[in-house]
Image: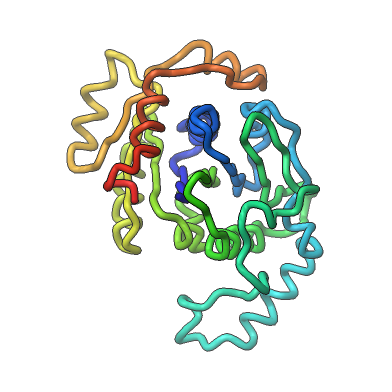
Length: 263
């Protein structure tokens, strides 16, 4: 399956993505983590890997992608533009078609980074969003394979249509007013495109648990991850998240059991 992780900046998207990927890989699955956040420089560290080269360079880099976009929008029918996708791939890909030089690997996990903003004035991240959307739409996933997509903060990726190629969405909610309010927006947008949407509460403690659950009363909460000093310290130091949290193991197990809610 293809699982997309989203939420407010700082909510713990990358942490949850990393821990879920490690848990699933430990259960014998082939896991592909796709980093679609152009400003995230921590996910690869949490996975214990080096940051791979931008996948966008496989297609000629950002300038070439912009040229393709300009040609596409010039020729596209405005009335049909929402349902059309720029043609980047000439055939459907599986995991083994991903170019090795753009992957980092460790312990059954592959990491692919769509692209990063490297220089002042280089332009917006829209081409990266297009590539992420097209890749997810084009990628075949076999029975023992799982894709985990770590997104940029907020909901811009919904506007880019990245969610279209995913099977389910997992939104991470931290104990903040902004995150709780954003959860409602994410819920509405996901349901509006017919995608299954679930919520996991992160950094939960005895003081905020009841308030968070009350605020998300009508949403599908599937897990609560407690505040953890070891996770905090590893994140601050840029170290690998070599931890086994029971709550993450439970969530990963539910997904991998083939629970009908997720498929």
